[in-house]
Length: 397
Image (tube, rainbow, N blue to C red; front, side):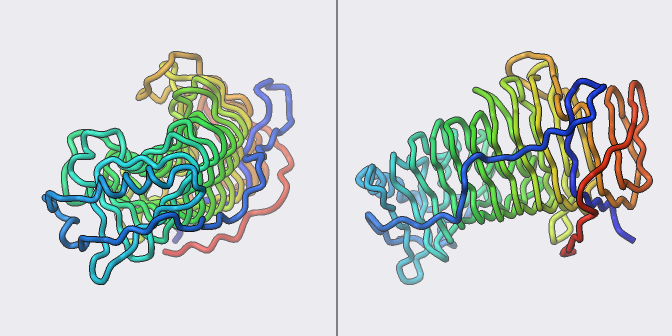
């Protein structure tokens, strides 16, 4: 017996004009994005701690903040990287907040972990990027240590702020106290083959937030997190031209748009991805959504041209949520307006349960959908012709 499983090739939408039967498909990132290349080395730093010495509630009082920051400052504008490397059995770096400067990168070698010390609790983030042409590369790890200590504040693990042409590639992010990766402002960001592993019970610990930026690609990424797996939002300006491809979520709150949409969200493509409502070890999401489009009059705005294509779901409680009264939202007040979403086109879906609730004020077009017919206040249904067929999904557990 399948458990809350949904397979579909397309959830997209037409115009808000209810007489229209056209569909405006999202195209996503306007750039041509390929696998990143690790830059050359500017300076190599050797580890001086073991993970067992720093990955505890009260780690050593000395740390690496000054020497890592000094190397990053020295390598600014070189186009090269500061490399964090192991030294014998020493495989750990311990820092407070560090800033990666313009036109340089940070590389964390295999088996090496950069841990946040207790002091970064009072900062907004552990790793901060506010300049352009910056990269973070693995295959090592950045660890926020929220699994071993309690943070009274809400520091993010990695934060960009108006940074254009940002790349994060082949790295592990884990144990964040708040969002693992927050990309805000600028233009052009690539998230490639990243693994995020933060407890699904860690409140407000989103996997990846994409905020007020255009031209973003997230590819081949696996996320376990305590809130939204991926969320598109607009706290400063509009968000547009975003592609999420080949992503797998475990125990998160789903693939989300919102809740802050007051500056407008346009042209977002989710495709070829899996959403599991629990982790591989069986820990359930605290809110097992899969597709979650949410906003509110306290932070509402125009959302349009959003497409979910070839997304497979298992163990999710809420398969599709489109909510204009989210009720937990702050920002700039505005009227929620779902164009190309308020009129929903659903095609090629195989469901093992068809329970639904709260349907209202929408026009829904259906094709090749088994046992599913929305109904409620001002809800109407009609037919359309969906291309493709129900995808073949290979669930792993």
